[in-house]
Image (cartoon, rainbow, N blue to C red; front, side, top):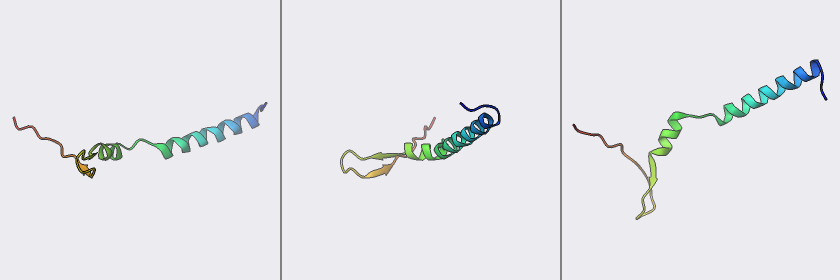
Length: 57
């Protein structure tokens, strides 16, 4: 079991490792929105982009 300075070093190393993992995963709103706009046509199985419907009020 680590004590003192060794414990502190291992905590810092683990925190850095977890931050790198979180940064690499990340959540990119632009990428998520772009992925949500793509669908597969049920007739021809071609990937198409959805066009947002605009409401004319």
